[in-house]
Length: 281
Length: 268
Image (cartoon, rainbow over all chains, first blue to last red):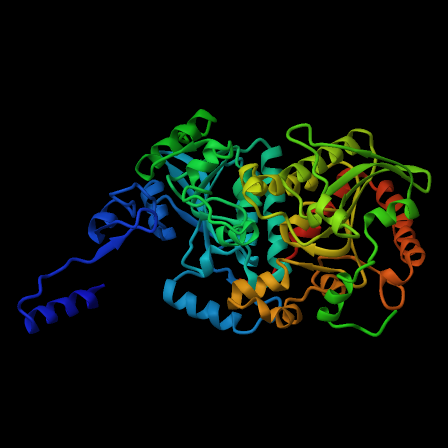
């Protein structure tokens, strides 16, 4: 970004007529543009249409949990290559370098306005948040940890679905995570699933859809099959609002649509309503 | 057993006209078959059938994905691609099995869950997720057999079980090789190449810990000898069902969870 700015400045010196233009954000939903600074100030919400853009996991954690309360679980876990798939190892190494992430989910414990919880945040920058062994294992362990310690779980989902490069092994992560959710549920634990952009494929068809309470951010994509796949099947264009959070809410698969700026407060209320109160010091 | 075929050759084989479907197998393997209909919520999906029958005289519950043997049958069963109500019917029938202490036998044979507007509207993702989670703790033994295609979440919705068997030429995959090539390489025509690197064969499933058994097919494939392949499936079930039924259910459930729990490859 700094480099862009520098180029703009340089250009101005060379060509006095051209006006300085601040970097802009073009919304993928409404296609309208706004200053990038405004979009970032709103934690990546479109000022024009209220589309809730994709957040890096670190920023999501920062705006959700109490300051300095996050303790990461299994942070060092990295992907292997179960199918010996061409270029997969290299792809992972490259993404670890560019994103600073080890894989597509961060899990840990934290407090939200004092209430303790296990938190998982998927990050779409790492192979579209796809679920392979690392995502499956970390989410499973997060639920198992919560079950053992009597904690609620809050999952922020963002995923294109299964990790293709892990083939059938990635499909089995759906069974693994869903099984862990079920045991957590049978032990009486609260699970809140927060669907963010995009929540699709094998993640929708497993732990994301199993929350006791399912929250979605406005206008985010939620679905099982991809839009292009469905359009290919039915040979016609789908309406614009198909598979948006509001559509899934209307169809009865989402309990509430909550704006990002209100999410922390609502999560805190829901935790307290289920008896997860601040521990006495 | 045949010489080992490549994944691609097997894919051709399971799409051969005349490959037996569940409708061929039921009268060969079971007696007293009574089909049950509907999910009690929306409708009756013909892509999944379910009901009660006897295996060696013992009542069992059967849940199966249905492929058609000709175009008319295929239209009726939507080419074995279930809608949410199919998965919900499966769950209803599985719950009934649990109540009456009948073991459940699932037959998987699907290219995948149906991808369409109505399927999305009725919660395809939720329906599959619910089955996976509920089957994990269903308090009765579950054996699943992949007859031909085991495609994606649509297969896994009937695939959470105590033991999974593959017919020798059956495949199980995260996505069809065609879809896989189209997603990963933006080129569906590379499906043969995809099939060879995806690890989708019965032997791959056993080595990855996804399947426990391979049921041998007659020379040239199941379609060459329906009696023989039915006999092989029956022999497998007649051994496994009593074995699983003898186990303490809590031990069985723990083993079921562990079977899936240990699948995955990572470094820490």
